[in-house]
Image 1 (cartoon, rainbow, N blue to C red):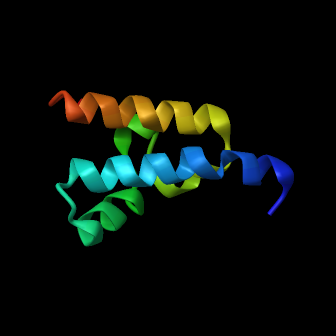
Image 2 (image 1 turned 180 degrees about the horizontal axis):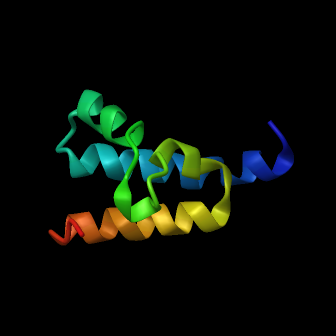
Image 3 (image 1 turned 60 degrees about the vertical axis):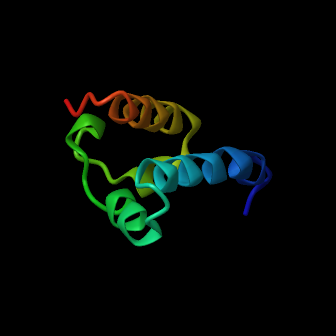
Length: 72
């Protein structure tokens, strides 16, 4: 892992924890969601967004929308 990736690790962990929380602790479903193409992410998989800070911000935005019940 590079230094930049190391510094992003807490943010990545937070995103994964947020998704697990979104699915009420169902880790299996959270992992499934993270590995599926998401229309709101231009058909990228959430896991693929964890290597770039801009894409992680976009992913956090999508998670927040889902938390509010907005599935668009």
